[in-house]
Image 1 (tube, one colour):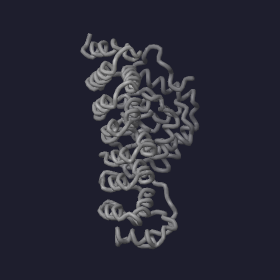
Image 2 (cartoon, one colour; image 1 turned 180 degrees about the vertical axis):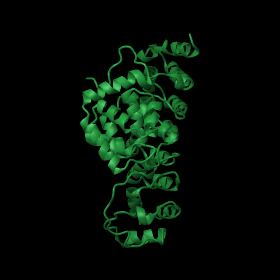
Image 3 (cartoon, one colour; image 1 turned 135 degrees about the horizontal axis):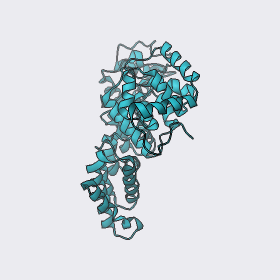
Image 4 (cartoon, one colour; image 1 turned 180 degrees about the horizontal axis):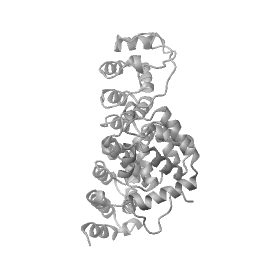
Length: 376
């Protein structure tokens, strides 16, 4: 028996705690020990083992004091692969418990963070605003729901993405908040002329504030301009190994929580989360990450077209996913049109047959009794 198996056996042998046949000290100790053990073996756990840890840790979290929950949160925060349900549960806990997860956990998705911003305290928002990376949507949520403390923390965070919608709101808030105006002035990365977008009926006071923040702003530019929806430039830059790692772990946590479904794919495509889209497809298709990354690097539209048709993806979602994925080179409009034509010309049954043939002979052996992709 390996060290991991022995440790797991010892930990799971004390599950009588879950039935209430113990005192608070025993429950706290089991909770801490389970999390500590998981932190040692997280990189070697398969999906079933992660799910077991997740279920038990979630149950124990209901039975222990906040000090134990805070201890476990600190253990889970730096892990690339952590049980998704318990991470989200603790991230929504009181700030003394949640803070390390809010500040450091890569398992929390943008949607998780946005929900916490909307429903938890200002202290939770301050912790999120200081993360190493704050994506545009998360920043928008902080500006929408946050008080001065979290908004200032966001503006001062040079790694926080401040997009058009957030910038418009910040301009309005800066008109009545000198602290926000002062910190906006220090953000040299903001291009007010290009990001100003549509600020309707902002009034002279906001215009004056914006001109104080950046004297180069043309008042006419700040007026009514039709809003545009744009893809993030980083998604046009091709594949990023660091973004892939973060996206893969976040999507894996989403899968642990049984929330990796069509709605998740629609969100990823809608917001241009190309790496998340690709990571989700590796899991839904049950192929190795290296296989999908190779398809992206080779601009292999045929392979991905067949794979997505086999999954039963609808044509409009397919086109959006193809457009947002982190290909080596950004697909042209002609590429997108040609790929969609091929997609619509291929039946699902044909795609399933081709894909399973590839699975058997090209990139791995079939496992006994494995389901066929796309089968009911």
